[in-house]
Image 1 (cartoon, rainbow, N blue to C red):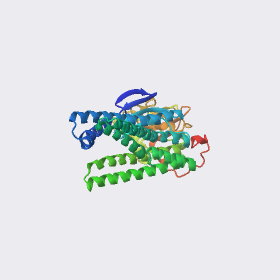
Image 2: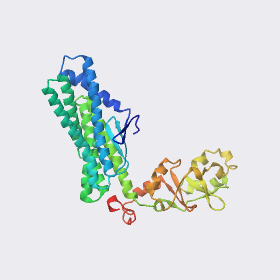
Image 3: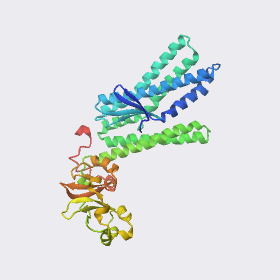
Image 4: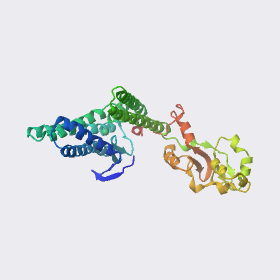
Length: 388
Ligand SMILES: [Zn+2]
């Protein structure tokens, strides 16, 4: 999620707002100004309700920020780099650059968020009681009490043991500590996250359908977010688990079918590679055997049929400088981001400038379905940082 408005750095952490945070701001303001405040304390002017509601909504956002800042600061203290914090429609998100190295670090980073919200709730409850004792306007006391309650609610909701909530991280830290298997722990926390997500989706829609409460859409939306985030989390962890330490050479297709750069497209088609090979891209070699580029089926198709007899492969290929290259001993996980960002989603594997293979995203996806074969002989690839 990209931030739309930067708030600069707080405690050394980059803080930004995503435009969708306006949804929270408007929702909270309207709920308070039109509902909570006039119901609890009638007789004030609309201007008083609205201005206090806006102020309360802003303090609410500040308390969300405090929760995320607590995560970020503790993460940094535990050696995890923090990319920044963004507040958005469903709250805040502290973007951690890497994962905690130990279950204990994970536990500390996760627990401090709900504890901060709980502390804020307690302090605000004390302030509300104090203001009430000083006979401050009941409306102001109401606002502070609402902030106290929402922070406590936030602490409780976030502590639910379901990924990607803080409680899900705590559950994962516990399972990880108990089993020593981070991937299994992630799977457990993710399953809990999806279960909670579906529960919220179903009850939310049931409230809309049977109770005619449109507000049920909100838990349904949060539930949907939990399901997708929990699923993405486990998928990423599985990829790290399966591919951790696996070199490119083990996943690539070795000795790929190649095309000479001086061949015409008509020659290339006459050889019949389309029918008999299942590839859609072919490394192009020069006469001395060095790689000149990559010919994709799409580029051949884009050339008019009548021009194919006079067009050479080297005229339509992607030149070497434009394609992703990899070394055979490079970890697949390091190559992945380059592959996803590249123009043709495949890499030519070169060993000292000699072509040794080609690797596609499909090869990596296939590798992910390997049962346990790549996991067994992985002495070289540490699966867990704590073993490293
Ligand atoms: Zn949190």
